[in-house]
Image 1 (tube, rainbow, N blue to C red):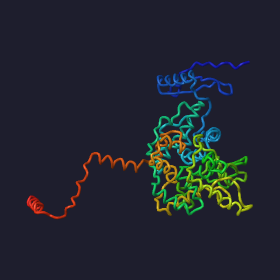
Image 2: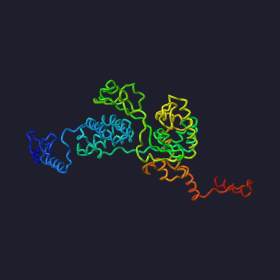
Image 3: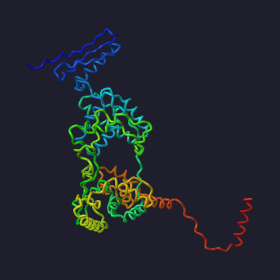
Image 4: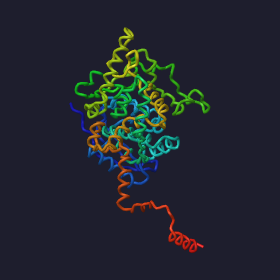
Amino acid sequence: MSPRKPNMESSIYLGSDGWWHGRVTMGVKPDGGPDRRHRRARTKTEVTRKVRELEKQRDEGRATKAGRKPTVAQWMDTYLTTIASLKLKPRSLDDYWSKTRNDIIPGVGKHRLDKLAPEHLEAMYAVMLDEGHAPSHVVKVHRILSRALKIAHRRRLINENVATLVDPPSVDEREANPFSREESKAFLAAAAKRPTFMRWAIGVGMGFRQGEALGLRWQYVDLEQGLFHPAWQLQRLTWKHGCKDAHACGARLHRFEPCPADCSAHQGYKRGCPQPCTRTCRRHASSCLDRKGGGLAFTRPKTKKSQQPVPIPPPFLPYLLDHKAKQDEQRQAAGELWEECGAVFTRPDGWPLDPRADWAEFKELLDEAGISDRRQHDGSRHTAGTILNELGIDMPTIMEILRHTQISQTRRYVKGRSELSREAMRRMGEAFMPGPDPVSETRTETESTRAARARRRRKIR
């Protein structure tokens, strides 16, 4: 026997408490019972409006599902664990988790999902800005939360994604600070004294990202055709628990209370003291005996465009061959201690270069070359794009070399054609302004010139 269809008529009545009440049947609960929802107001007109709104949502199929709604913290855990993890790259997922733990949960995590209001988000963003977070950081948090709420709305857990009603802070795009041609030459001259010279030549001269340069392997280098195939990148990933009970595994490392005001344990932390653990904390996977998925790993680039082959500048080829020969000598000298990974740039024992050590070496080379401090991305990718532009290469070609998906992104990477602009404005000035009077070669002062000077002096007096 099929279950009886519930009566869909709504009721409005004045209660003994002095409030007007409305009852609306929305459908059937998962357990088979009727899904009756309640609204109340001080006036009959107001409660009637609320009842009509519920009925409209029911009839249009926009009504939320029955049952108690999760908190923002509970939903973010569900979203990141079972939904976002299927689509995001490992590093992006780690970033989502980090901002959720450090910003979203402390800010609005206790609010029920259906009770979250735009004012809650605006207050959280204001606090983050007061604490010194950059506007770009707040925008990233807003995007993560908005995406999670969008999925919740799609699954009818909430009626509206309130993040779409909030304007995040404006972000002033950070201006690139690439090397000039002279700085590029000084940087590579300093790098030439090190075994990693070609790693920096590829970064500055070809605009490879750090992960792409360190993840380059010989099987993807075509020396005959002169092509690099950046099919992989090297990244340091966060460890994950391989045990059955992640919470119990990290029990000895759980810290549920915030640090005291005079905390000395985290003085060297750029972001200050870490947030305390939640009661269901599943972190501290680095101490798990069965940990998995972390450490240095070769991963695919984010887009297919990033995997397109890049021509190797012909002057680079002899240096690459010499680098390969020296690596073969290292392999023979290490013998059984050599750990083969096929990477172009390795440590003396064959392991790939650690991104942290690579970043530290970049800073050392800046000091040796006498160049002011800047981001590694500025000294490689932005530098390559800017110098290509100064050499007169058109934007579509630079876009292909840097493997961008949109030309607008390429324009952001190119700071400007400073040398060409200077020459253009020099010619512009010559076109409008008269040149200086030619200097006379006559040095002898005549009587007429002496008389003219005397007349000028008398006028001045």
